[in-house]
Length: 572
Image (cartoon, rainbow, N blue to C red; front, side, top):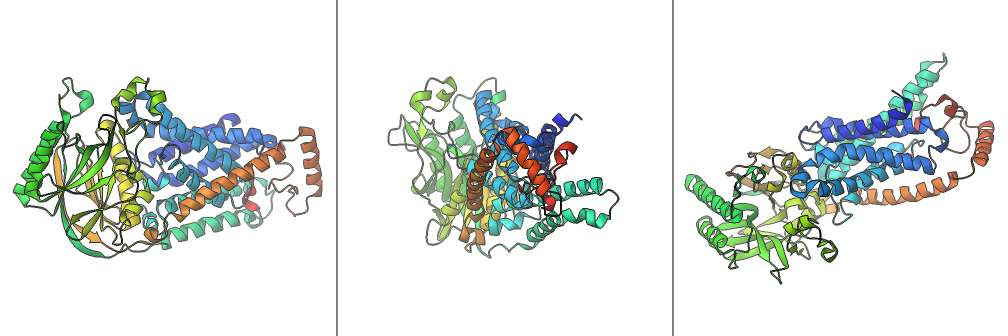
């Protein structure tokens, strides 16, 4: 392979491995290879042009390699967005993720020749995920490494202590340390000139120590979930079996059809197995305000159902203060009929899905006609009482991505919520990997909080998720179906719920620090080539650390450029 293609090819492979670690492939061990390969791509790039490897031009190439890895991962991973948002919406969202990964490549490149590169890369990678989870417009932390580890990874229990971002940090740390050890070994074998192998491999000590240490931490840092305290008999119903994108004769009233199907399936389940403690209908089950004239027929279905089941928690669209212009995305608790006794209103809304930012400026764009009313967010965390003395933290749709929202809703009252209920409507994304990727988020939240999660999706896949991340009674997509279980309740707190997202905040700070260090370094190196060449020559002559490296501290030997070698900071 031509040397100028080696780096971009390696970066693209890193992105593809990150993609394959998530559903629908779901080979989570591949996530250990992706960060290390991206670092290898940056090394290969620096070896092609050593003189500019860490200056401004090197920063631009680091951005390109990171962006290439991001495009390879996110363009196909988010392909499910094309159906509801078209290629423009999909392209914009992918572009945002690509820009973040471009910044990731730029910042990791700053530390390529440092022995502590694995720690820097892990902190920056975790921080980039944390920042893209909040910016822009509420953020979109989809495809983070942590979500690849919900099915079978030995790292998963770590989330009870450090949260999901602790998993990401350790995966990157292990991966980059392994890459450094491998590259240092290859360089030592190449350059030993007949010397003893033990001496030649001395430069692998530090990365191997980091690698082994990180592995030990990943295995030993675990705690058991909090003890269970009682159970709640929960019936979750999904009611949409129509593949709308294939329907030649569209249903004239989908909300009425869905509410009717939910009622019929619920009453059939009760007739078969008796009345549950709690019945859950997913997001958009009542897609018009059931208390309004427009939603009267939907309200009748909910009223009839709640009279039979006793307590019904249903996803509902409620009119806002100005019904023609705004609304609430909510989950209402109905008791003994259409009598609302509690309500949760969604806090983190989806831009261009539930509201239009700067609507006055963008009103000309035809696809935005699908969102005629903006949703209004809730002001503060809240949980709801779903049975006598039993509180639930309700999460609506993509709020599953925000671990802080889940934790805050659990801890909103003096007595923490004992169960988490996710209600979502994934109908817009068709037969795609999105429901499985979405369920993975509920799986991770279950581990972080030590609580069972009821994941109720209007079109599937619905499931009960245990505090170890395992799923139970998973339903098929686009079926009218129901699942039922005596769900254990948990009142205790995991360490993560007590201390919060410490790793995420450390990562955010690390990104800012790396950016400052990078700007200083790039400005220092952006000097006339002649002056830099003279300084490098003097450094090479005056090097006194016994390795032949110059005093500039870049960790390279004086002849590396001529050999076109890969930087060997592993032994610095």
